[in-house]
Image (cartoon, one colour):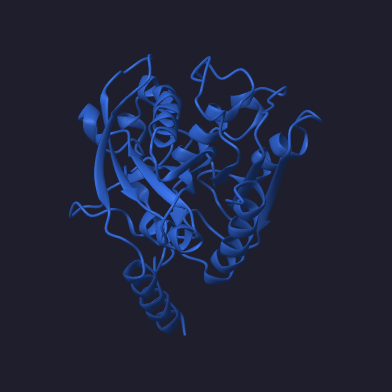
Length: 286
């Protein structure tokens, strides 16, 4: 049964990707901040002519590309879904231009680069707002794992990466999948954001645990429009197409926790509905 589900998910992914335009390689400068660089991006335009809402995608600790140089199946899947929904996508590669490999293993983690990534997010926002196919005032951001933590650091009220002026205003909505740094210990009990936020996480995730994240999101300041949904039995990367559940001992944390990751089709299906509805409400187009 699980094998058949993975096959059906793969077929659905291929059909989605086939309905979308080819990716475009783009470059844009990072904003002033640590680890300044000329950033690489992969752009996927929405189906249809004219201006559309857009999203900035922020990859996880493994980077944007897999072992063979192709964009991760998770990001490609979501880009295809968003394109069909009328939303363009710009995936930001924060590691390649800085000649840095994965940051999942504790020995490879670079805190300076991690805290540079919100500057990358805003650089991508500025790039999109300058494009004639984007509704400049309707751009959101979505990230996974370390990229989800970057979402929290980007949209927080006192984010040092936020420019003084943005052509179309700030991000209009944000989604964080199983985000890193999602706890009052990492964000502070007074964490808040002016940007609507949806957090999606698995209850069985031992890498980025759900309960500290729930405590942060459910006890935010009243002015913050943030919500969290926790999926029973789901692990890290539950929305990754066709990934068998498995341990990753190479990324054992400093606390000795061995990460577990893998797909959960039911959680993924629900997440697709929630994310699509969330962005339809906050990035409605014209």
